[in-house]
Length: 98
Figure 1: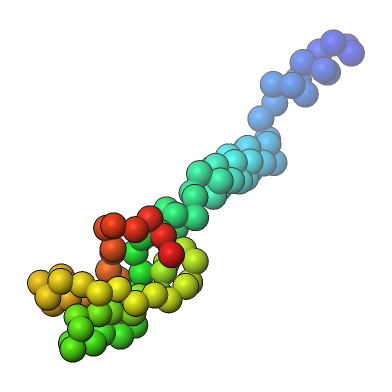
Figure 2: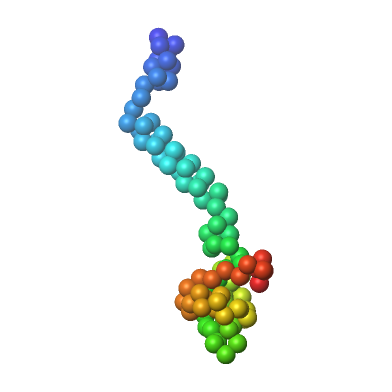
């Protein structure tokens, strides 16, 4: 009798077991997704940022970095300056971060 009782406990699927299995699967998936993202993936590349202001007299823009939050003025070529709109993200290709 004792052996039958142990076997029945192992193989019986209850609603409680099914719910617990689903909870563990969802929790595991959530942990994997959160741990697989790096800061750069969440914020974008570290050579990009939000254009805060521009100056037509010298074709410069002030950009706040996506990763560090630092602000820096960049002097652009006139054609590049025309594509750097205030309030939008813009990437500077010759720097890695600031």
